Structures are given as structure tokens and as C-alpha cells.
Length: 101
Image (cartoon, rainbow, N blue to C red; front, side, top):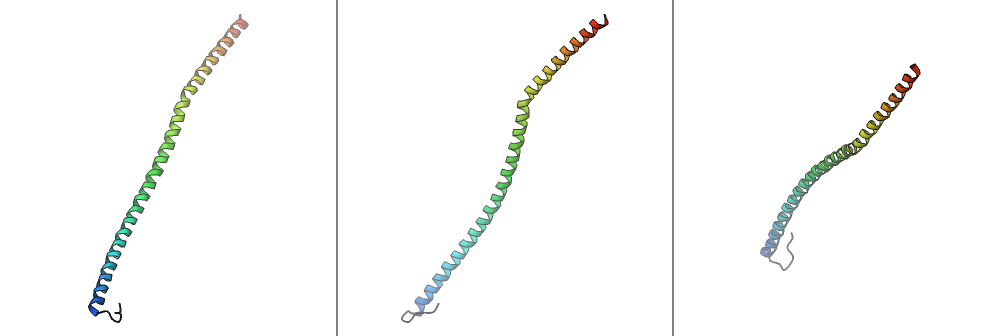
């Protein structure tokens, strides 16, 4: 920093030292902020992975719940099918018994 006319060299040097100190502090703070941003980026990446995993787990649970909700209906369908088969089988057996007599 060049000293202006009318300003003593001591004042000029004091201002220069002050500016250099401020610059070093600012540079140190920028480095700290840069490190903090890098840490935030890492945490964000981890959170994205956790969110993806949770989303997949919720989707899987949704499929499982849907299957469980449909299970009673499927059991009723099987029971009705078995009853119909038994009735048809009984009617067929009775018809065959009548035909044979």
C-alpha cells in the first residue's frame, strides 16, 4: 500500500498492518465456511440416501399391507369355491346315483 502525501509512514504502516490482519481473519473465516459447506454437502448426501431407503421401505410396506388387506377376500373366495365344488360334486354324485339305479 503506497503512502499518500501528507500521511506519515507510521500511520501508513499501521493501516497496512491492520488491513493485512483483517484480510487474514477474513481468509480464515472463508476457509472455515468452506469446510462447513463441505460438511453440509456430506450430510445432505447421507440424508438423501436415508430418504431413498425410507421411501423404498415405505413402498414395500405399502405392498405388504395391500396383500394383507386382500387376504381375507381371497380366503372367502377360496371358501366359496370349495362350497360350490362340494355342492356341484354332491349334485353330480346324486345324479350318477339316480342314473345307475
